[in-house]
Image 1 (tube, protein in one colour):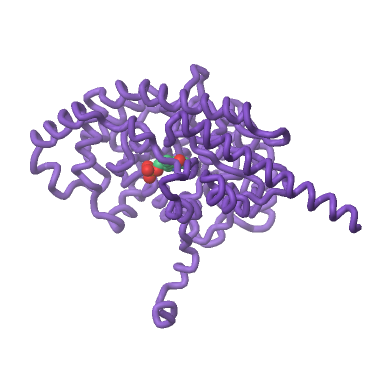
Image 2 (cartoon, helix red, strand yellow):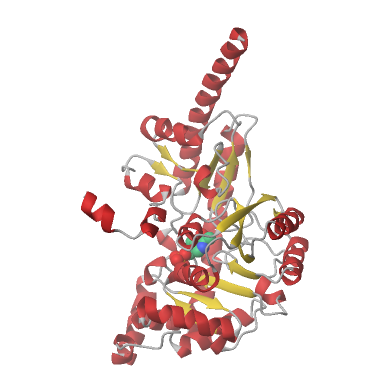
Amino acid sequence: MSRLIESLAARTDRMRSSEIRDILKSITEDVITFAGGMPDPNTFPSDEELNEIFEFIRSVKSKAFQYGITEGLPELREALAKFMSKFGIKASWEEIIVTSGSQQAIEITGRIFIDQRNIIVVELPTYLAAVQAYNIYKPIYVGVPMDDEGMKTDILEEELKRQINLGRKPKLIYTIPTCQNPTGISMSMDRRKHLLEIASKYDLYIVEDDPYGYITFTDKEYRRLKAMDSEGRVIYISTFSKIFAPGIRVGWAVAAKEVIKYMGLAKQALDICGAYLSHYIAYYAINSGMIERRIPMIKRTYKEKRDVMLKALEDYMPPNIEWTRPIGGMFIFLWLPEFINTKTLLFRTLYHYKVAYVPGRSFFVDGSGWNTIRLSFSYPPKDKITEGIRRLSLAIKEAMAIGMKKFKSYKLMS
Ligand SMILES: *Cc1c(COP(=O)(O)O)cnc(C)c1O
């Protein structure tokens, strides 16, 4: 073992297992889990749809099993360009690269943009898997707090000025503007515009991670940053994982041609080419209209579950607990009183009350968020959501009572 440690590259020191993954491992059958951001399996393709898809695969046969182009199946890129034009994003197929899930696209943006000690801006809190991908390139994170309109862009600008004064180079803003993971918050239109102005003023690229923009439950318009990007600063990233199935591992990025060129070069070293079989499946699903036919069903499924979770929170949670009210996606975020450590609470919740969640702390790059919780409403059935929130509220009430007692005895002593 010690021989291995001596041989490993120093960068392995920055490779950490995600806390979520570790929690998921210890979950038994009798636990109601709000931990993983797993899609509801009922939203996956039906038997008939699978027959259609595999009939198509049979018709293209060897093409689906051969090596392909690094940037992805051209027909799929054409189909994605057409699909996204309905959501305000204009791109030619050459401005699109297909990746192994959006995770690979996120990793590649780190690979081509980040030098050691560059400044990377993220939301507080942000998506853990993006931080894991970027860590290897040793950036300095600047976390910008959020409110119910998303990232506070005036604070962002102050921070950028401060970092530039310190002689550091801000490079990239990583943001999930719509139904953010972990908070469920969506950035207001004013903030979106301000963010683009700031990126232009300080010459920054923006990584717009948008897995949930296609599954919102409101008619209110949240235009994608990419749709408003007149300077080619936005690298738009999305995925089939939440609108079709994560198991095919197909995501994509849209960016200016010169950015796509470097993303393609990076990708050559990673996998030569993507899984063409998956590209053909994704191509069929999107080109035949299957995806667009399925989206209303997926929205309905998650909207019902969100409503059930919000109602249960309303019914069961004690006062002094706050939570977000997402307009789509899969997550609700909770703030408990500051004296409660949600990581410690999880052991009691998991083993005694049989409910799992993710302690929010790991989503905060500044080490804050000890009193926060991420709940995912996408996976459990509705009756389990209600029961799980009831049990969670009992655990929280218990922790609050213990915390108050400690606080009082502390006051008596001092
Ligand atoms: C689910 C999710 C993704 C999707 O990742 P894939 O690699 O495409 O499965 C990306 N970003 C965020 C913020 C997510 O929540």
